Image (cartoon, rainbow, N blue to C red; front, side):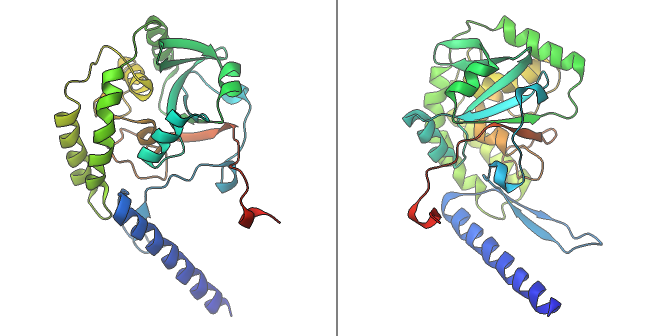
Length: 268
């Protein structure tokens, strides 16, 4: 009986993996083949956008945050929904936590500082990630540089140029494309399509990447103008990053989560 149960689980796992690969083959979805270990055989890991407390996460209070933590969020606007649909991710905005219940972010009005309370009030979902290797001194430099940028104008041109780039880069993210080739492919598209984008103005994820770079703790050697909130999400532990990450981000927890509306099939 135990053998039958294990066999059924293996079939379900294989079916789920086949379905994921079928979807990825249409839309583009980075994957990674993990070598066999003494405990298990080789595994194919597929990039995941699953992000909810129910799939292994937890809800946390703002007091659990540390300076330098990266917050990813989504709001109930058409612009946010458009970004999520384009990047196939549940997040559309990136912020950096400064400590003392303050965050810095790049928005349409430019770089600004808000309280974490204001963020939680306006966003539908807020999830925190942490660079486990960020030192207190580097976190202080992240904060100081971020505060010095307040008032810097928004990189509107960079956002506009990102629209075709987000679509074209899907070619690089087809299943089973090796990581180095995928990274080189995305960088090639970015160099051609985003070369005219300003690097002295910021959109949200560009601002976060630049803050870490200025602090001497770059999250990736990719140009910050190439990185979206979805890319930051996929730099987490256990996921598959499209652009090579210097080190994986550690999930801290959800500060806020609003479940999607229930459908007919969800009803009891």
